[in-house]
Figure 1 (cartoon, helix red, strand yellow):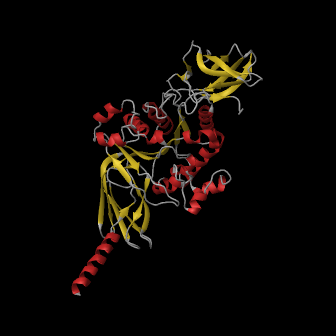
Figure 2 (cartoon, one colour):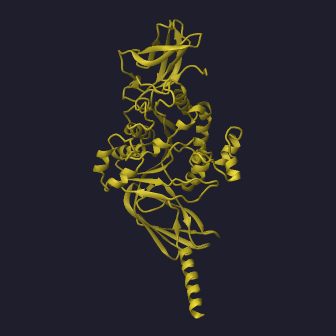
Figure 3 (tube, rainbow, N blue to C red):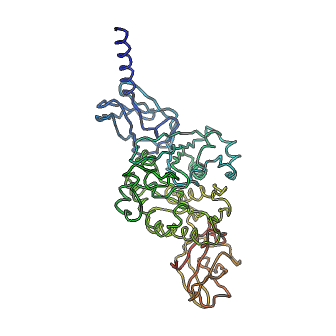
Length: 476
């Protein structure tokens, strides 16, 4: 009898000790990067009603926080200028220490498969240049990547498994390619540690990542949320349904302190391009509200050309233009154009470096004070039709458009009959405008550029950044 009592007591004691151990949220782990010069958010679990003392090796200060009746706690700690490695110790009667922590610039990177695609590529779909970068990776280089596990949920989850990787070959292979090239450029220019948190899942819609409360309030007549109430997901591609990835993944890292947000998504919404012009601004507003930063930078990647079910259909082009139009609706945003890196027969372009670099140019110019490059893709500012041609004026930076003295394809003109015909464009002497003409359209009233699923870029700024596909009309 005594033996049985002893065993029961031992089990209960072990269970108590297990519950007593402080547990930061999974996003906080060895090898992580915290945002520099910030009041960085920290949260997790401990013994109910217990006092938790947090200390760091970069400061003599102590942070004391009390867990609530469920053992949940939340606090903020002041971070220094970029540097490391450091340690953070949590003590609620039992100590836990996180090691090899860097302080620098942190960016949250989310979206669908072209953000999810790792440096090691997909089977049969490599990332250009990845082999050299992976093989030469050095753990001493202060770039760290974090991947969140894929997880769906009907209600907002507090935890989602997260893994932080150092910059060795095995770690770089697991990093999001687009995000890693971004981080590499930021680190090269600024010389500080960079952390990228990859929160992505292939073939997902933007509404999969949106708060169900927001969707119910603003899109209830358009987006089905019944699966959240009846707790039943479709058997085919359940991860595409509204809010399940916000609940299962994104919510678990709110409000991890970061510099900004990178977004690469849109293919799954391309047939609803007009709706996307409302969804993406609502999504960004949601992010900024939940992170508590109304000026949080938001940089996104325009979808790349791809044949889909018919290369001549216009829907990808329409979507690219819809994405471009959201720039005027979202303060402190920017778009990396990819019209020149798409692949006709592969939806996952191998050229991820231009994507990461162009996102980095936007951040460097807008958030880090780096001057000298026209980071913004050329965007049409005005359309004029006269003398049997279309004149399009662009916002295109100080150095203007290029190339000059060439006839550029991928343009179309239409007259009163609304039938589009191939046209050519020529950059004008001011390098801010183009003249578009076609022998088949004597009196044009509409001009388009790149309005197909598959098209090739011909118009760039002086730094090789492609202009966004566009159209002057709004015809179906």
